[in-house]
Length: 271
Image (cartoon, rainbow, N blue to C red; front, side, top):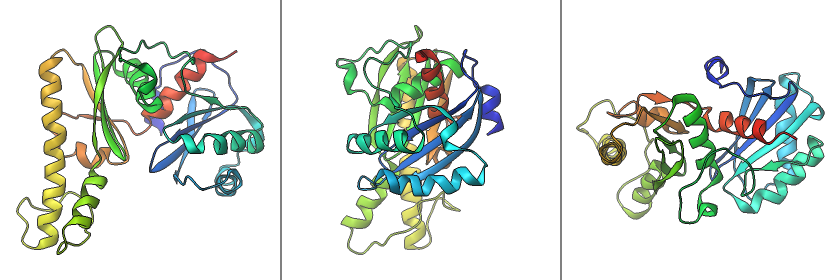
């Protein structure tokens, strides 16, 4: 947490409590900024049927543990790739934080031109990540986000969002193997102790892990050939540490990248 505070680029913003919400298909992360400091973050599972009150009942004890009053929120900013939850999140923000939320959607100022055939197709989280990576690490830069899907997003030398690649996430890939192979059973997805498995579980773990690292590095190798002046490849998302530890190209892991990007966008849209 302290590293995220130290590296966050300064923008002119307020000093009150800012609630940031990053809604992914698997997990929802709540980040709390006090002024320019990221003071806490909470991770909940994303449940499309969960009500605003159910989210509130989970969040209030977490806020209380830190001695933070939700009613002191200056603003609520939401990046979501799960449209069915938007109304729930709107109710959550209004009822528990007393604020109309700012959703990251077309019309919100990001300061990043989007070079995509249809800019509205780009997930909000991808733009938020790309913006944060550009401000933290410079351009050109590549962001690899390990979530339900794994996304590769490129910011070109001009600082523009230049497009990206979407592939199935490692957990989706593993679940497909467990579900479709009758004699194979579910195993923990982790880096195995050795490359060559001496039993079925070890062989599966090696195949899942090194197979996925190969996918990631294969894509990154092609991207670097296309953009040889890339300054940094930064990984984020729930599986970032796992895959980065075996990658030849990923040297930077930033679990707070999306929250930092949300704070930057909020500062640019104040007032």
